[in-house]
Length: 264
Image (cartoon, rainbow, N blue to C red; front, side, top):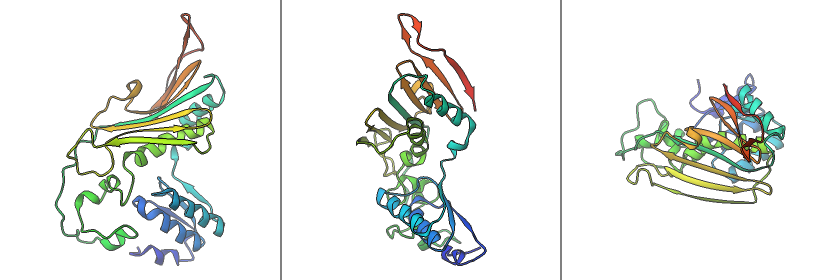
């Protein structure tokens, strides 16, 4: 057991590290681990900003280390099968994709600052984040709703679901992005990140829409979370429970065969 991760990195018997801290620590820990000659498995989201991600890629390249970001859905068989179907071209031309999460979390009431819990090295927990008085709302789990440490539901769930769109569409960088959101579901909520958000990514050959909201469970296509690849012959729906294909119609004729829900 180490109270300072840098002491662990000095241990020559350690070859690989897993970084599963709050998001605001990922960049510095990864850079330090690569410099110490360790390979790295880092939790999603990889970083808290594009600038941090650029530094992380540079550290991995400079020290020639193997780095993997935890996008574990890429390893799950039903995701592999669904993405292979998208790649097969059977959906036709895909011009529109969607990813969404309708999260049933209720309101997070404001909480008063409080003493640091026993056994917690709060200064180390804060690390590169701004120095703040301890507040239980900003600590375990709920840290993800505060900009100092994370990016809200989009960088919590969105990073997984959007990744499947990027994989399915073999996408590179988007050309334009616009985003709108705020505290619309819970106007008096203590969270800083938006409880309701819509983002539009424009690529050269398709669009991706991300949306999330809190306090609601009934999402698009009747799924509380998911991905939709909409082609001119059919739409493939995919989430952590399975996938299916709903065909388009042309003069009351199906343009392709339907595929019933394939369970995870």
